[in-house]
Image (cartoon, rainbow, N blue to C red; front, side, top):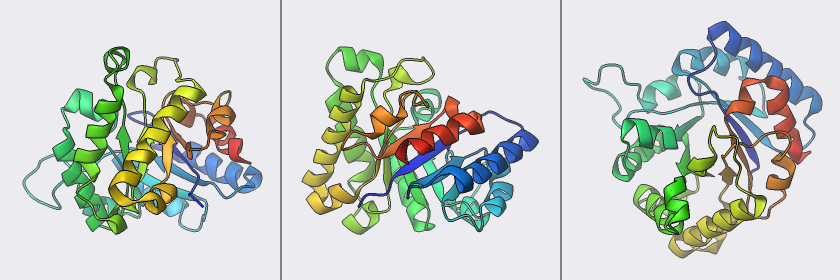
Length: 254
């Protein structure tokens, strides 16, 4: 059975005290209200990772992740954070290839393949993002775009390594815009992603791979999205900044 995951991505929001407060609320709500087997991940700014990891230490349903990392373990890279550093403060996951990193920081599929290697070599799990822009969707290129993002970013791995990867499909045109892919549109892409994985690694690996939806998922649409056969949860942006909204998304699996 594939792991069901709801991951929050706080991006560059919340100060330290706000983050600790919201995370404590999330832990309490998850313990009191979540009855299913779904896992919860909160991906916070680097400066909060250690404190949140300590709070999550004895919480079997709640983990902490970073929003990015550098591809090297150490070196003269002023201002960067390595996967080794992230591992050392207790985090378990790292988001890689978010559309905002691709767009604003020029991250390429090659760089992301190197970051994936760094994350896996430090016994962390990557949440690897793929997705198309509005222009790519409207021009009909979206299948080719997503195929190249997956193949160039991840298909250098062997099946055992790939088994540690969580994928997240994020239609770029639906991030922060209030627009959401219909459940049918999201399912179509998730099924395509799973088919590509099966072609590379075989159907059993594809069947075990968790693929999340990440495009303006919220308490109102989560249940319909998560009911699709190839959607295994969500990568949640805005709704993860309010503990009530975030946990209500998690409860869509209850």
